[in-house]
Image 1: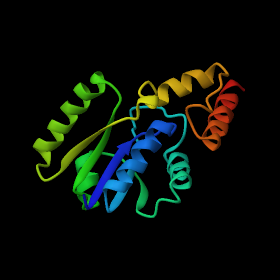
Image 2: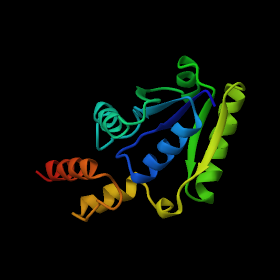
Image 3: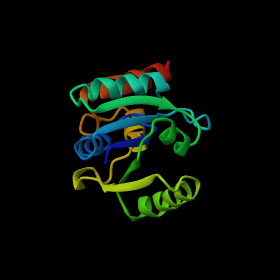
Image 4: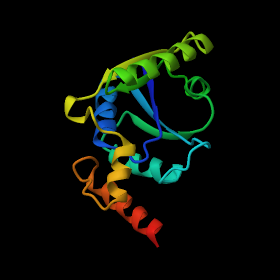
Length: 162
């Protein structure tokens, strides 16, 4: 793969996301992490905060770039002249959902392929939503996210309680 896009909300970025990022970076000449600014959701972190966290966490991967985007994924992929979209799969339920999106994207943009990577088994249960729920009850999240992310998540949760 020459250039690929790994899109997501990354709210917050987890070890599962980082696993897919590292593997995708090895498979492509240039990997763009597309941080979705989803206007229909209220994220824990702003898009700028998520971009900055990802930039910090991927600074040692020379072929990785982090860019915020809104709108259709196929438009973002085309605008960045990428060849493929990377999607991570944890379970069969992810596949059913992701397959629908991939097929829809294929109809809209037949020149863009979707590549599915199965997550490392040790992260197969992990999602950003689970991390946020654990953190909202004051639970320990260092097993799920890097320490710098855990600190920021816990600070956000504390600020929400004020």
